[in-house]
Length: 150
Image 1 (cartoon, rainbow, N blue to C red):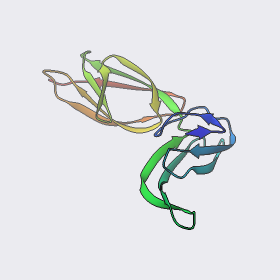
Image 2: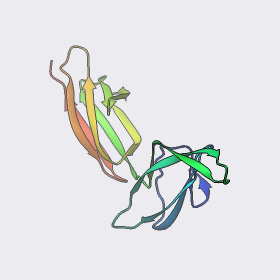
Image 3: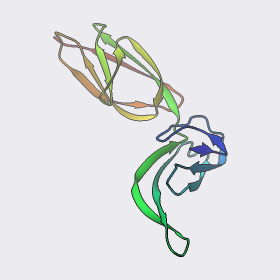
Image 4: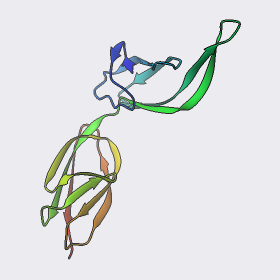
């Protein structure tokens, strides 16, 4: 994927700190038709998400045209702003799961967490599981402190 002519890696991808204004996105993959999009980053809407369906290129027909074959959607997230998340527990040493993925044990300070809502779960042997939903703020620092019960 390319933003303003610069390669940004394969999709799905989250790109932080795009300056305000118009940006040109190009999604290309061998064997697929290229998709070009224009996005606008404003102070009122500092993030933009794209979901793009790339079409597979088929064999050339007798008239020289190329047949396009629809394919599953390829998600790409542009301009998603990240935040920081700190997680503590009493007692310390609990396993921390964000959106079902193990990310460490408490205390843990995570950087580059996508802004928005996330499911968080803490597990510690001998204690009841603790779960909640958290909101990570763009460019901000969020903190979760959990007291685990036996």
